[in-house]
Each structure stands twice: as C-alpha cells, then as structure tokens.
Amino acid sequence: MQPYDDSNIFARILRGEIPVHQKVYEDDHVLAFHDILPKAPLHVLVIPKGKYATIYDFYKQASAEELLHFSRAVTRIIDQLDIQKKGYRIVTNCGRMGGQEVPHFHLHILSGRPLGSMVEPLETAPSF
Image 1 (cartoon, one colour):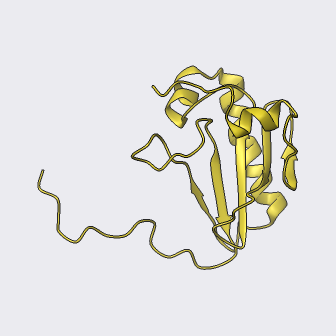
Image 2 (cartoon, one colour):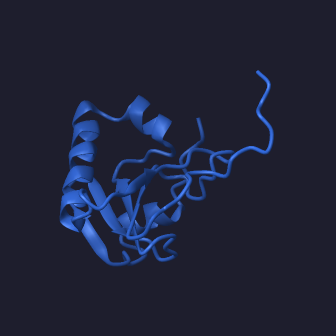
C-alpha cells in the first residue's frame, strides 16, 4: 500500500490550512468541492475525511460506517449537481501507474459534455 502523506493538499484542506475551492458538500465523513484544474465543465472532487492514501486503502481500512457514509454522500452529491439523468463519469486513480497525483483517496465526478473513451486504446492487443 502507498503510505499516507499528511502534507498532501487534501490533508491540508481538511485541516483548514488551505481554503477549499467552491465547496459542494460536507458532512462528518466527506468533503466535496470543485477541482481548481477541471477536466470537464463539471469536475467535483469527493474525499473522505479519514487518512486513506488510495481506494484500496479506503476499502481495506475504513469502518463500515465510513464506507456507507461515503457511498451515500456520493449519491447526494450527484443529486445536488442534478446530473443523474444527463450522465457523468466517476474516476479514481490509484498509485503511480494509475495516474494518482495526490496520495489521499478521492473520486472525480465529471460531467457537462460528452466524455468520450475512458482511456486511449492500445495500438496492439496485449498478449497474456
């Protein structure tokens, strides 16, 4: 597992050291806010308030209450953003190969335009 880094930007936001950018949702377990470098017209980050480096870490270490609360918060955020009928994409990056830039588990909720393919196709089929 990737170690949790207390100096990451999301940890600093949660401690109040850095202001949150356009808060969307907050409760005892979850914080959601607009990404400062959006990849789509709507780009919201959803983070648990616990210290989890990756989604694997979150699923492995979080309490049942945290897991349920996070899942329910995501649906509340989708309802609040009114994107459930229009369509959206939820992405989480895990580790270096997965493109994770901040070592604090977070979801990206993207919407507002057709998002196309999730990743570029391989030029040749992999051999397993």
